[in-house]
Length: 78
Image (cartoon, rainbow, N blue to C red):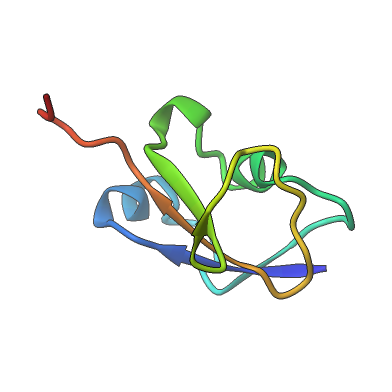
């Protein structure tokens, strides 16, 4: 199965410089957490994740063709 990847902010681009941003291949039944593990994005480095435009949990099972957007934590917020 393949899922699409959108990198929302440039702070991830440095971390993912060797990755192909377009599409990532995953095993059927993979979760959003497993997807992020494949990209080497630690969970603490996330503010939120959206799948097909809807905020979702890390345990959401992905489907073929899903588009995932990840946001890093806000620095200096609060």
